[in-house]
Image 1 (cartoon, one colour):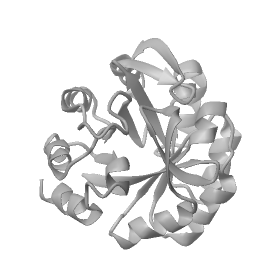
Image 2 (cartoon, one colour; image 1 turned 180 degrees about the horizontal axis):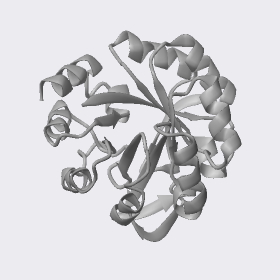
Image 3 (cartoon, one colour; image 1 turned 90 degrees about the vertical axis):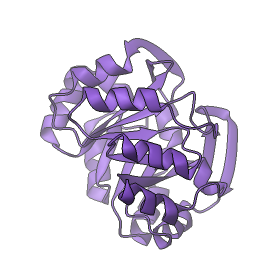
Length: 239
């Protein structure tokens, strides 16, 4: 299981939100590139980047910041937030992002999403952000009437890089992940599933690894030093 340290960018800063609430923000640094270099120095083999401004407003806001991150480090990065058209996909891939996370458009423009997955095989991950099991979009500001499991199965035939499953109720709350939901999602798909939301202790990392997940994204608990990245990577390899 791969460990993906999260770097959420808003207004050029490295921040964390609670349950995706833009009014419950904590700033952890003014230089995301410096933070990225720090995680790589601690053993990170990949990074999960999010353009929070883009996620909410549907366009790219932090390109220069992300470009600086890519220049500072030499590990694969995935990026989510504001990936709404092919211009964004093509631009980010040219910049050096390894793969892109698409959530809102996968729900709202299914034909377009299918076309993009076939045009960019292995370069797009399905971002499934769920609130009480229902898919949330537009930076988690809208909750749909589609379940995460139904949307995942709908796209199970596509050449996706992964499915990134976030339990919004757990995100940033330091209360542990939703193991049952993650296990059910993992068993329902043949695509790699990456868990996100609520990873708080090293035991959470061990429990997720034992489910056979492809990876887990860790945010606030790393920044608040509840988890050592080096230890998390070690545990993920042992399980």
